Structure formats: structure tokens, C-alpha cells
Amino acid sequence: MKFYDFSAKKMNGQEVNMDSFKGKVVLVVNTASKCGLTPQFTELEELNKKYKEYGLEVLGFPCNQFANQDNGSNDEIQEFCSLNYGVTFTMFQKIEVNGENAHPLYKFLKNEKKGLLSKEIKWNFTKFLIDSQGNVVKRYAPTVKPLKIEDDIKSLLK
Image (cartoon, rainbow, N blue to C red; front, top):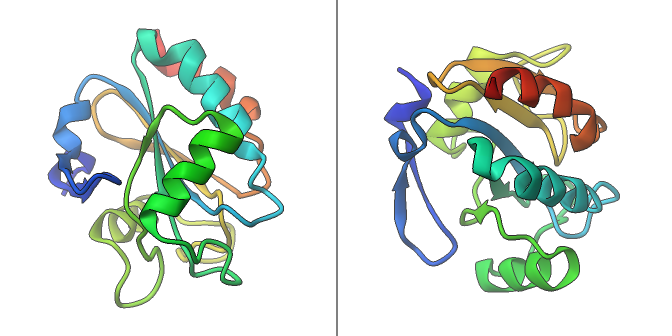
């Protein structure tokens, strides 16, 4: 299995095949609207605006599995991200990232790059960087701010 073998639904319900991102560098993030790390949306959007034209795609996956920090509807989450953080990168419908109902994409990502102690996602804003060939290159802890990943992104965009 490769990153390109999966699909997910955008906020508007449209199914998106990850193979539509072939040739792009992709940053996948599980997000939450009511988390201490929520301000990371600002830096994620900054990276999106700065590098989209060079081939970066930021993909947000809201998740409510951590302390009930994204309990709104998909529409409410989309509106919150737009109004409060000016998010223009692709946001997908809310998913689970751990457990038996974890989205297949996240099962794959966790198997490709384990965290410090286990495969499981520990908190909101865990990030996965995927190169332009669909390889999962690196996993970043939730506390790693998006701009700290900028050099890794730039090296893959070359």
C-alpha cells in the first residue's frame, strides 16, 4: 500500500483520491478546534500560502478523539477554521485516527512512521510529511510547530 491508494471526504462530501496529489509534497495533520495547539492553524496556513505554488499540499483531518476538542459538526469546524485562521488548505471531514474505527489512511500513516513510544497518535496536530513519490518521510510530534518543518518541506520541494 502507498499513500496514493487511499481516499477521504472533503468537508463538502466530495471524495478525494490521494493519487490526485501525485508529484506533490504533502503535510497531513490531525486537527482540533478547541485545543491548546489550535493556533498551529496559523503556521499551517502560512506554509500553505508560501509553498502551494511550488507543490506543497497541506491536508487537515479534524479529530475529536482527544479530550473532546473538536466536537462540532463538519460545517462548524470548516467555518471556525476559515473565520479564525483564514484556512484555505484542504480540510477533510472529521475522522478517527486511533482504534478500530481509525481511518484507513491513518492506519497506514501510523504503520509507516511510528511515534516515540508507539504507533498510536498521542494528541491533536501530529504531522506526517509525504514526499512527491508518496513515501511517508517523517512524523512530527504535536508540539512541533509547523514552521519548524519548513526546512524539511523545502528540501523535498527541490
